[in-house]
Image (cartoon, rainbow, N blue to C red; front, top):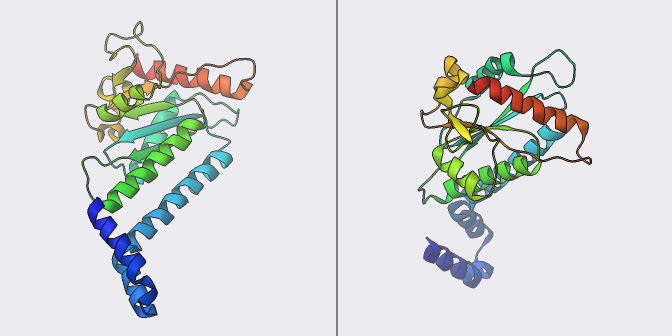
Length: 223
């Protein structure tokens, strides 16, 4: 694939000036249309994510689902509703609100468009993690290993449940989430964890409270 790109770039530089407008348009549609569409989509995803984070002031619980499984928006809404029983109201509006982000990552793909899409998803994940919000995560085995590789720590549950994996996560099927049809669509090897967060005097009271609430929700789900 790399050699093909080199050939295309060499051809472009050599003959672009001599192409007619019609030939240039045809060339663009042949070689760069999908890359352009994916690039625009990637920017749109990032902008949408940032706007969502800036405007979602009434969110009580953040959840990230990262793996190779696509989850339809209808099931995402059902998941949010099923989680309400365990969510602690953060802002006193008498509503238990969850924000669920589905990061879909394709593996072993050589398709250029799929690679661009993966990169957009990776960027989306990085933006969410960089925001530093307390968060529950539901991860495929591959993503769980990737989180550990990146040094992301999880709340220690080694003394909480015998079903913990490495004292950090629990299979979703071994939690109370397994009682709901919305979560039964997840593969049996997906795990649930809570990202560990250190805070100090400079950490906002809201973020501290949200972290403690998130941990409490997590404990409710795995006991």
